[in-house]
Structures are given as structure tokens and as C-alpha cells.
Amino acid sequence: MNKNGPVVVIEDDKDDQEILSEIFVKLGYDNKIVFFEDGNTALDYLNKTDVIPFLILSDINMPKINGFELRAKIHTNELLQLKCIPYLFFTTGADKKSVIDAYSMSVQGFFVKPNSFEKLESTIRIIMEYWKECIAPSEY
Image (tube, rainbow, N blue to C red):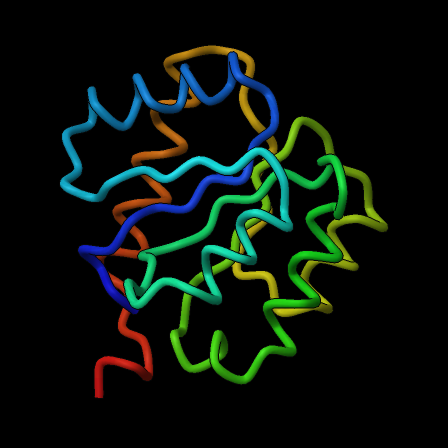
């Protein structure tokens, strides 16, 4: 895990992208934020870049391929597995099946986007602080 690497955000809603950008700036993390509007573009970036992202925040409902399909492609890709990139779902809603399916695919977190700016900021801070403290196999 590259704690100084970019945060990959896969989110097709432009308003959500702007709000998340604002929150990351306000929180002052040095990590660059890289947005993708669909899973295929994100997967292409992950496969081609030499930079190891810090973590992936993925919506579930996206055009082209959904978050579950993207997770499956990343999880079964040997080169991407070695990068130890935490994969978290960050979506507008949840149901029992989605949460169970996510964790059965080794997703490292499932978060429902809060409705208020303050709660969203708090959630992003918690996610970032947790993963900044976490130790990954790639560190050894």
C-alpha cells in the first residue's frame, strides 16, 4: 500500500465529485485525488500506471461496468493484487445482499454516502486516517 499514492474515486455523479474534491482539500491530505466516471476507465488506469494508489473509493451503480464487476476484475488480476490497494464501496444506498456480496469479494469497506457535508467530511477523515495507520503486506 502506497500511503502517499493517489486516492482513486470512481464516481459518475459530477456533483458528488465536486463535493468530494472540496472535502479532500479541506482535510488537507497530500494524496492526489483521481476521478473516473466509469469502472473501465479506472481499470485501464490501474493496469497502465506505475503509480500505486493509496486506496480506491468506488460507487456501485456506474455506467459500463458496475462496482461489483470492477472489484471482480481487480481482485482476480495478479498484478493488481500485488499492489495491495484497499477497495472500498462508497455508494448512495445499501441492502443486505449488496453488503454480503461486497465482503464475499474481499472488499475492505462498505460505506453509504452521508446526506450532510459535515458527516461526509467525517466519514472521509475516518477512512483516510484508518488506512494511513494500517499496515499492508506490501510494506514488508
